[in-house]
Image (cartoon, rainbow over all chains, first blue to last red; front, side, top):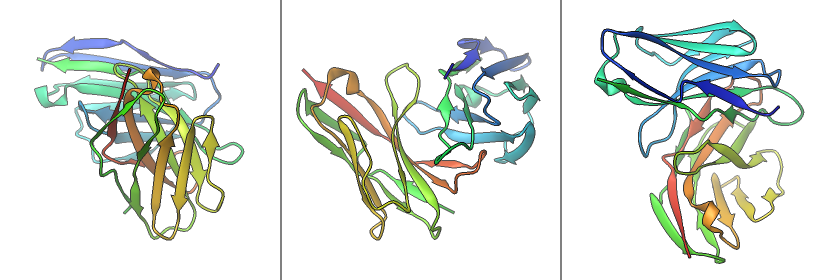
Length: 114
Length: 116
């Protein structure tokens, strides 16, 4: 299984809502990532979990709250978002194995904040 | 901090022809890795090819090959015998070291359109 899955595929939420994005991988990878991607732009790193501990937070606003309950699962909790937070949210995972640490990406969750 | 620059926002190529995408990067690191990722319209981002900085030999994956010029900090991607399925956004990316959890720095992307 070389797949990273993300749910939901699409999410529409109001600025007062609380929602969560979910990411799962069963490749035994020990690093997991959240990226935000605006249209026609490259992904921007938000968070990195390494061995289930938050290792990088790229100064993301606190209305985004990551969680890594176990080595296969990564969540992104959303609360009081702004319309400018509308974007494609990508999850990725990687494992230091062999020569190179390649990141595998999920299909993304397209988020619209009204 | 590392930076990655892709100077061509868009390129088009006829089916079966060859196209070369440019990428330059800036780093003071010696141990790093370079990648080309492909993101088709509304589809998943996938790795096309990768290069270890310590290797002089250019990487090749089927129709995809790179020209890695370490001294010039250049990492171009050549797509040979272009196919309609190659239509996508292509991102060049840099990673320092190879530990799990290292940051991937992306270039701005090049949109490639393959015309029939």
